[in-house]
Amino acid sequence: MRKFSVTIPIIIIVVLIALWMLDKDYSEINMMTRIMIAVGAGIFSGLISFFLFRFDKNHTK
Image 1 (cartoon, helix red, strand yellow):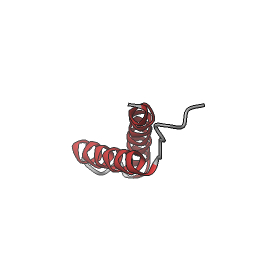
Image 2 (spheres, one colour):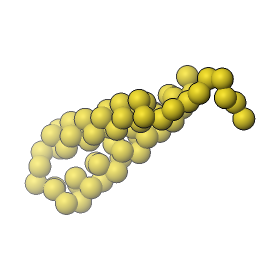
Image 3 (cartoon, helix red, strand yellow):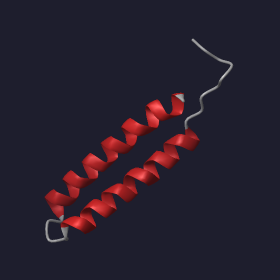
């Protein structure tokens, strides 16, 4: 469950930044396409963070 508390904010931040960058630099692209690109980037970064962040269940501080 601790992985999701880190993964979900990463997804949200990536989607928001991707939408902002696509809107700023590539405004000629259709809005639905920009949303799909941003959501895809968010899901991809969420998967990467989910598998690469190590949370040891036995080690608590």
